[in-house]
Length: 446
Image (spheres, rainbow, N blue to C red):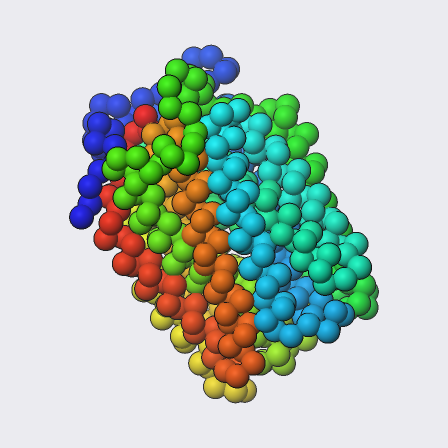
């Protein structure tokens, strides 16, 4: 069942596991910390100067990617009221974003393999910032739907490209926790969005506030100045890509043993992201409609959820190196499903319990993502890594995107809390998908 798509790749404990990457600064740019002692931040020192700049660019890009995504879920109630939408129509806004993001992610993956990781990262950030800004000017629902879909082009590509950029600087020993920290930037962007949402909706009437929230989505464009001046691809990976006869293409990731990896990778991504985006899209509405919380109250409850998410990303990154990629996903798939059921079945009037359960819910549904960056990077060779990771992650995101829409339609008869339980089914699919994927902990990137 667990055939290895890259049997020649060195496994954990081999002599190449800590092989240094020669950075543009010269010398052992991404070596094992330059002889410095270990510790909780050894993974960061091992990146070297160029790797740390790439880390900063990818961290900032993903945080702002998250910020721009959450402008929609946080403003969804106001948008629905402004355009007189039913739950299915509001859920479709998220679904369109995620479906188009599959195309954006797949195209960004191919571009990353052909023109480089850094150039593609810049393109994705510009795209999602521009169309988030334009969402704030939408005169009607149909235009908003189009702008939000186009925002998905950049949104879909940023994570895969940024994760690969950093993965190719990281050592095999600490790649999981390094990418776990990158993943934690999603919670940072989410928290920033909640803070801005709370302030904007307190200062403006709801009919205007949702537009202002979208306008703040232009902020990520400032990141481009940093990336253009300071970030470059890992030289070793760039050289391997340059010398390879196999350039990024969809056909390449469906050849030989990579076909199995791609199919099961998509199933894994679909399950995890279907569960996650169901919650990310509908929890704010659940808190306001089913729980009757105010804007400030919703922000307070989301603080617990986001705090759990941030710690979950960091913890999951550590555990994916200790337990292995597959075990980390399996453990948190089970715990996420249990948390969803518990969170949405708290009796009426027990809002304090909802508040407290937000922390483990955020922790579990985020910790499962921490290993994705390292796991998907290790499943594909350098020449098609961008294509493979971009396609798998974002195709799963597109299929999983139908979960929020389904919840929107089910909410009419089941209520938002009842429909949210459907998200737990996604985590069951993730467990099944693991049966067809190999363990890659400790694998060197080739």
